[in-house]
Length: 344
Ligand SMILES: [Zn+2]
Image 1 (cartoon, rainbow, N blue to C red):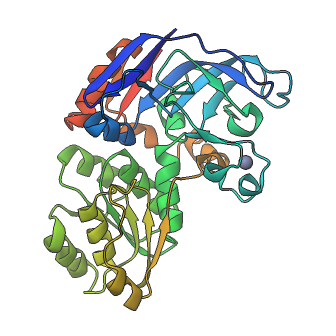
Image 2 (cartoon, rainbow, N blue to C red; image 1 turned 30 degrees about the vertical axis):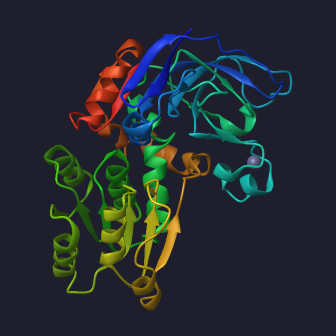
């Protein structure tokens, strides 16, 4: 079968790999029908060290179940299913608490041992716990929005939940990539009154406004912090969604949250140390967030997608076939595209 393999910074290839197959009795074999390239796939694209064996890519995908292992009970052959970006058993203590990204018997797609979603087929471990059947056909018009539930929409929602967004609150979203845009959708959906997007790219800003952003701040650093304070009577915002992960964006997020407020971090931190320990301490700031338990959120968000109340699939502005995946990486890395969808 064909699949995407990353060999080093800027070196991503689509090539022949061993066919995916069922190994454990709890596995399912999925034939992929849609996949996406994630902003987090760009981290290795920017700085991965060269590797002889390479690393399989892709953790956002939907597909049709072609076969199931002997112990799979809920998932059936022929089901169209969404695969969250972490796989999980659905039964351990953390899964029961809705934190499937910390599943005791789970893990993440791709790498050197597992299939990735940017390929023709995937062996899905813990199929009953991991996969979510979708009540539509494989080429349904809502497929882009449904695909976002596997990661970016769930991640934007997680940022908003971690930042304690609620009715009437003031919110800022740092970073207008696909996750930040979904964070705007999530904040609006949860009833925020003011939603300030911090970004400087016109395509992202326009989409954010359509999703419900009330104000845009295109400055950076101290100027951005000052502008957000101007927009909030000098106070800062109650909830900040940090959707980038750089030191500068984290400093901005921690600089615009008001006393007693919360910061929900979903951008993977690129530094080991978190800035602003003292000011956030003296202002009683809650700092939360992490990898979103997408599996826990899909059931809640699915009806809103199916009934058209939210349209996160609009973040996709690049589409291509599997063999065009390297160009999708290039386009996203060059900021020519917000997010790429792969059609099979
Ligand atoms: Zn578990």
